[in-house]
Length: 150
Image (cartoon, rainbow, N blue to C red; front, side, top):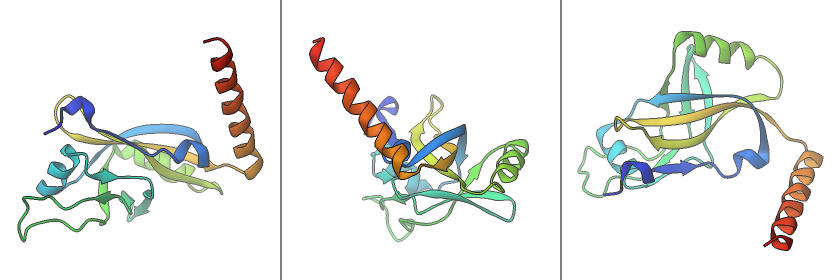
């Protein structure tokens, strides 16, 4: 079993595809076999996104593999999972989502000090193609300067 500090599943495409406006840390409503799979690093959030259903925030398309020792009680791998935030945070997010081009995406799935699974989410705006090109140029320049000063 992995240590709690080692559980840190990131959405690597998020920073390339989106520019972040605001971020939050939310709890997740999970089944027992889901948290066991997360503790074994068997989850992925690259294709996940968040959506409001009846004034509640859910994460969709987050993959959590079936637990190996799970029996017939095992969970579905891709189901809608409720995110736990304060009402004021939910209201603020829902109000800001009315702007065009904004979305809520998961950035990082981790286990906190108390052993609870948390999902770091961000209010984000999609980048245009030229913004992505600028990011690639900046990254290449940083790599080049690192190589020269080594």
